[in-house]
Image (cartoon, rainbow, N blue to C red; front, side):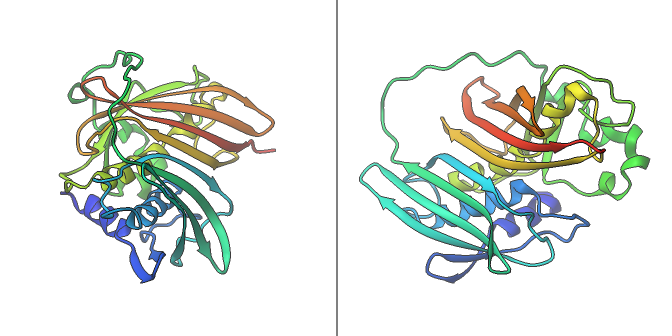
Length: 286
C-alpha cells in the first residue's frame, strides 16, 4: 500500500465521539475547500458504521444521494451526525449531516439492501484500451508540471490512467466532445470490507465529472468557479476498488451556470458496477 492510500484510509477511519456521531479530518493540503469526494466518502463511512456489522458485508449500500451545501474548511474537523431513518427486513436507510461551525455543509441519504436473487441485465461496457498500455498520471501530465506546481508532485491514493488527453490541461485547451474515459484503482491492496471499497469509489467518482461538463467550452481548472452541487450513486454489483475500473463519463447538458454529468463504472470483466450522476455549478470568469 502506498503512503498516499494509507493516508486516505486513515481519513476514512472516522473517530467515534458518541452514538451516531463521528469526526473526520482533511489532509494537510493547500486547498480552499474540502474535496467533495472526501466528504461523500466519509459520510458514507459514518452511515455504514451504523448498519449491520459495519463493513457492508451483510447489508451493502445500493444507493446514495448527496448535496454539497457549503464549502468545507479543510483546516477544521467535520462532524458527521447519523440519523437512523429506517431499519427494515430488507432495506436500511440512513441520513447523514456533515457539520462545521454549527452549520451543515453536506447532506447525504444512503440506502442499504440485503443481497437477493432476481432479474439481471446490463448494457455492454464501452471499448477502451487496457490500462497497462496507458501512461500513468505523472507521465501524462509531465508537460504541465511547471504550471501545476506543487499539485503535480503531490502523492495520489488513486492510480488513474486517462484514455486520451486529460480534459482542461492548459489555457490552449480546445473545445471537445463532453465525454471522457479513464481507468482507476486504489494504489495498493485493500482489506476485504465491501463498504471500504464503495467509499473509495465514492471518493474517486468526484474527481473528473466537472471536467467533462467543461470540455465543450475549452475551459481549464482555474478559470471561473466550479463546484459540485449534488452527487448520486447506485451500486449495482460487487467490485473491488483495488482492481481496475473503467469510468465512462459524459455530459448531456449545461445551462444557466449549471451542468449535468453522468458516469458508468465497469469492472475489467465488463460488469456494470456503479452508476453516477452529478450536477455542478459552473460560473465563467467575467
